Each structure stands twice: as C-alpha cells, then as structure tokens.
Amino acid sequence: MPSPHDPTDRAAWLRLSLEPGLNPADAYALLGGVGSPRHLYAYPEAGLARWVPGRLARQLAAPPPAALAARIAAALDWCDQPGHHLLCLGDPSYPRSLLDVGDPPLLLYVRGDPALLGRQALAIVGSRNASLDGRDHAHAFARQLAAQGWCVVSGMAAGVDAAAHEGALAAGAAGGATVAVLGTGIDVAYPAHHAGLADRIARSGAVISEFPLGTPALPHHFPRRNRLVAGLARGVLVVEAASRSGSLITARLAGEYGREVFAIPGSIHSPLTRGCHALIRQGAKLVESVEDITDELGMPGQAANAVPAASGGAGRGDASRQDAGGARRTDGDGDGDGDGDGDGDGDANASANANADADDGGDASTTAVLACMNHDPVHRETLMQRSGLCSADLDAALLRLELAGRVAHRESGYFQLTPARPAARRKD
Image 1 (cartoon, one colour):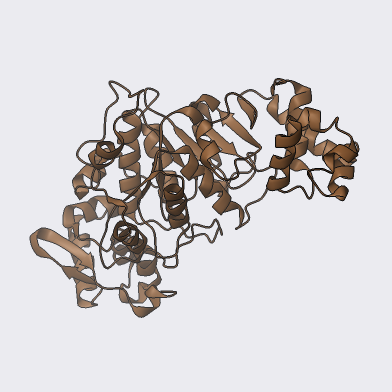
Image 2 (tube, helix red, strand yellow; image 1 turned 90 degrees about the vertical axis):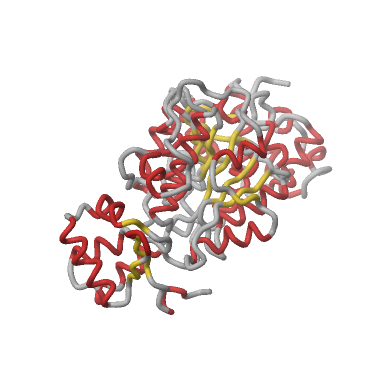
C-alpha cells in the first residue's frame, strides 16, 4: 500500500473526504473495490461506475475543480505545520478502536500526539450546563484516572467536558493525558473561549476532528463527534445529564460498541441527574469512586507512577471534591450559551435558576450564595469558601433565603436549595 505520508497519497485521501456528493457508504465501496484513493483517482470512469452512480464516476475520473483543489492545498499546508498530523483510514497508526464504529472517518485531523489515540482511554461526558458539583466530580475523576495512566477522552464542550480535560491536564506529564474530539474543523475553537484550552491539550495530549478545515459548529455534527468519543474509549462515564442530553447519545453508542457505561448518581431533586439515573436503571454501573471504574475495567497497561492523585475519593463528599482539583475551578463553565452542540440539556442548572430569581434575594451577597448552591446539601463552611463572603454576610444572606423559602437549613450546618419552581422544570 502506498504511504499515507506521501503528499500524493495524502492529497488523494483529502480529495476523497472532501468530494462533493460522495457519501461514506459509497466511499467505503470504492475503497473496497479499488483499493487506495491514489488508485481510485487513476481508475477509468467505466470501472468506477461499478461502485457508484454514473454522475459520481464522471466526477471522480475528472481533475478536481478549482475550489476543491484549493481546499486540498490548504489542508496539505495545514498538515505541514509542526504538531499537525493527518491519519488516513489506511494508515497503520489509525486508531484500531474506531474500526468498531459503523462508519469510521476516512481521515482524522490531529493536533498533538497521534499515538495517544491508541492508548487505553476512558471517556467522561456530561452536561454543558453542569452544576458546581458536577464539574468538581468530572475534574476529580479525570485527574485520578489520568494519574493511573488512563487517557481521558471528551468533547471539549463547556461544563463537564472542559472540567474533565482540565482534570486530566492537572495530573501532569506523567499521566495518561487527554484527547479532545471536536464537532468542528480542527482550526475552529468551539466554544470560542476554549481556544486556550485546546492549545494546552494539543501541547500535552491531542485534539482531533474528522471535519474539514473551517467547518463551523452545526447541531448535526455533534452526534458524529459523540460516536468518536465513545469509539475511542473502553468505557464512558456520564457525570451529569438531563433526560434529553447529547451525553445519553454517547452512552447509547458506547453500549452498541461493546463499551462499559458508568454513571454518577445525584440528587433526586436535580434535573441534571435524571439522565444518569435512567442509565443506572438501564444497567449502567453506579459510580461513587474511581475504584468502581477500575474494578470493572482493571488498570491500564501504562499506569503512571509518582503522580499525585486527588485527595479523598472523587464524589465522596464535598471536602474531597474541593481538594481534588486544588483551587476552585471556573474553566468548565455552565454558562448555557446556547451553543447547539447536541449536549444541550432540557433544564438549566440550579445556579442558573437561582440567578434568574434575583427577586427572592435582593442583594449581591444573596445572589452569590445562590450561585454556589446545588440541589445537594452544602455545608456552611463550603459556602463561605465558594462565595468569598465573610461569616456575618453569609449568615445574613442565608437567613434572607430561608425566610424567602429558597433555602432550607438541614442538620449539622448543611443548607440545601428548596425544590425548583415550575418554570425551572420546563421541557420535562
């Protein structure tokens, strides 16, 4: 087979992936019948018509039009940049795990280390409108798993995805690293404020996309991204997901591909845990700690040594979640920016609902406390750390919220949001 690193071969693979009107099924049929794209584009029209309609056969047998030639040249120029790679389906280094996917990409654009795509991986996915606790869980689990040598795969969306990538990066150079799968072109940062995160992932991990350069974020691209997230991993951990969520698509695909599915349970009052609870009812393994995952999958062959693991068990109490990631993280935002990435949950998170109800609070300190609370009980000391309020201001804000019926005082210094108002449960 000709080398996929040869410019002529790469150009042929690129043309095949960019060919107007050529669907994946026809592309696979051509490769199965003719062999490599280089041979395909030297084939006579009559021969190509055995596998594709006559119109396509004429198109493939003719030289590429100027617009297509320009796109191929731009992609070749991109590949020549340091740290940029193109993995073709015929490349020996193409990730074998993606062959389980029903329609593996003809090629992958890669920024970073393509060898990571062959490493034992665990995917972590969840809501882009994640709660504070959800982002903490994702960060802590990713950090511990990466410290053990797992490569953490996610989709670089806001919320859980970003927190998982950050957690894996926090494990350091000796960890299992992280791979971000994009639903856009490799040169398009989405959401835009994750451009810096993508650069950091590319330096010590890998950012990959099957979409051509310049491809914008479109809703139907993200289910395709999700199938690669599931295909690259041995298992998928769902941290938070509403009842209608792109994360559930990833989990379903993982089950179809023979991967393990794990889910973290949460408060029965939170709309962001309904998807996880549904997965558990359907047979996903309930996860409270990293050990619940490694008991099922074992340890990766390249487990890292001397990498500090997150203190405490991830997801086993607020103090361990606070310590696991070090300083409080704000990078995995739950801003609900309407990105249409296929991960949009039907319900906004508790903090967003709380902020929308400023009429119950009345001042900045009350709003700050609401923004630091989730559906699960939170200790007063944790609220003080999260909000940055002094003791007197915090107590005054909590009292106002109790009187307004927004917060309930539980035992042992814990506070909890009262059940959401009907407007907060829209689309259920």
